[in-house]
Image 1 (cartoon, one colour):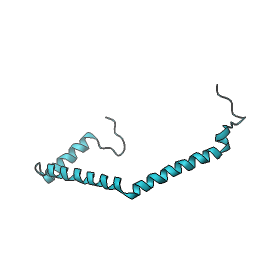
Image 2 (cartoon, helix red, strand yellow):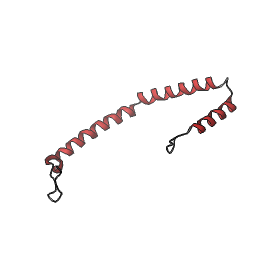
Image 3 (tube, one colour):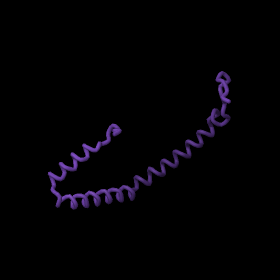
Image 4 (cartoon, helix red, strand yellow):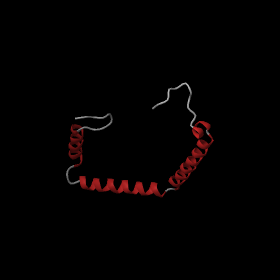
Length: 90
């Protein structure tokens, strides 16, 4: 099995599930899962509705426009000047 840095393998996940079952018991797990799901849903809706997200999107679009304008002014990109010392690709 291939493992990547920072990812859990099969044995680690099984161990975590067993520890959670021992700590909370089988009856309490559905309540915990519902509470966790509701919390994540509330967090997502709060972050999507915030003014900061809208402001960041506006700034990103303005930065893209500035980048396009700078690329137009850059003579190397405008004329695609190649170095005469480099061999040409066929």
